[in-house]
Amino acid sequence: MKLDMTKQEEIKRSLGEKAATFVESGMLVGLGSGTTATHFIDSLIKRYQEGLKITAVSSSISSLERARSGKIPVVDMKEVSEIDLTVDGADEVDSKNRMIKGGGGALTREKIIASSSKKMIVIIDESKLVKVLGCFGLPLEILPFGYLATIQKIQKLGYTGNLRKKENAPYITDNGNYIFDIHVPDAFPHPEKDHQQIINIPGVIETGFFFNLPSAILVGYLNGKIAFR
Ligand code: 5RP
Image (cartoon, rainbow, N blue to C red):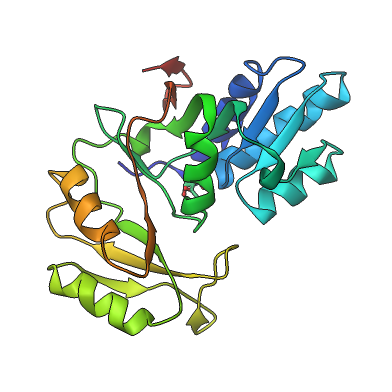
């Protein structure tokens, strides 16, 4: 489902505001990445400036810079073993709350943050709800070392895709790696199986599949309603 851009932006802002209301003083908060997560960070900055006492940890350099621009103290993930609450967006969510993430290329850090969180709220507009994962594609973070050989192994399994580019050069993640975007004509009816096959390839660091991670999915609808699904 395609949503009007302005309307979609409005929904993302409301989702960010709503998600920020679940943050309590004393929490270590995981910051997701992407446009919806950025609205959450902006609302969190507002609450922080009103007196909410929190510390954050970030899944990307851009979210870290955004939070620090609002003076939120952000600690390095090297110092953290458990996060109280993470709020992040997603590219697709199915009826079993399985997700595809990585549209912004931050999938590996996002997965580490999500899997280290006691609670995770995923904020999405209704266009992200899908019957079967894969309409958007599947981002993989891959090591630059031997990347052509890695891509050949991915292709030998029957997956086609493209190396993500930025200004005619390979897109580089915050970890210094590449992104290979798989595109499938019929989506992924058995995503766990696909994940397992792909992650076994040497050089593949992470897939954009997220399983068993969100505690809750907060959906923003076109009619202005926001509800947990
Ligand atoms: C970044 C992500 C984002 O959460 C995902 O791409 C959704 O982004 P947006 O909120 O901009 O639609 O996984 O790696």
